[in-house]
Length: 344
Ligand SMILES: C[N+](C)(C)CCCC[C@H](N)C(=O)O
Image (cartoon, rainbow, N blue to C red; front, side, top):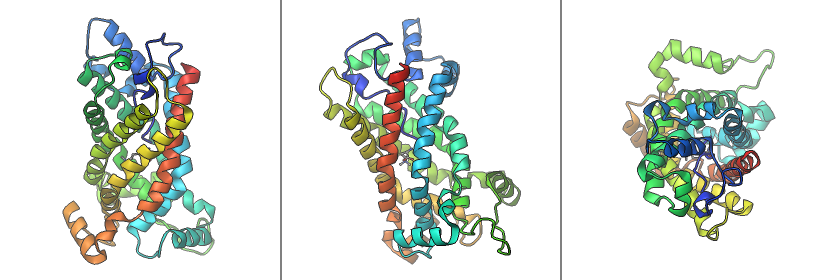
């Protein structure tokens, strides 16, 4: 889950304080402080990712990344399943129809299909996203997090850092996202005696089957669409969060919980609204490996989807995704800030 990794927006409004009293300090930022207090203004290349700094920071940073990400994922997964089904299957008349059919045929468990791999991979994906984001900001602004409080980074820098993080995390996310989408689209009820078994018995079986049937590259099906979806929209995500927090936080103060909730929620919505057209294409490309529909490439997928279903196809799942995005990203940012505070 994205969401937890901005160098705290509140930090930019906070006067210099001792690290122990400062509200939001991400592992990487502590590390940045150390790096900058030494001779080098830039992070050593071998320490580029927060992945490594989070591990070195000890269990706190790691728990932080895992807990916030997993919480958001579990909360939002039922919405995500409905979204994926609406985007890739033409059998539903709308959100309510999809929910009712899913519940009737598959029970509540149907909404949670495909959740295990995203949870298992959240630490890696978030480490890459936030590590790259945080360190790109460090390189761009050449200021430590403490200096950044007095001199907040420009939105252009925040945007570029977010895009860089989004670009690099996309390739880590791609196989996990593919397996999630394939499992979410299995509409067979679980363990019904007599009914045909689903094609994939679980995430590992799904990964192994894709590898065997579609080759190693099959695991990266839809990866380009995912990269194109995430690169600009994660820039928008961080910039929106930063902007909203700065707007509603008086100088010298940390953002209130309400500000964090609202800013996180709207950052999620804004980013998902802009991501939806490519999200639809990405999900369709990922499902294309099953040969129900084949596409020559991303452009072909866009053109044939639009021809057959009209331009509205690019907005499939927008409503449910926005409904999901607000609480998920509000909670993600709030728990992130809260956990940093209590462990600070
Ligand atoms: C960039 N994109 C719009 C795809 C996602 C941005 C929000 C990410 C968040 N973890 C969530 O799952 O809602």
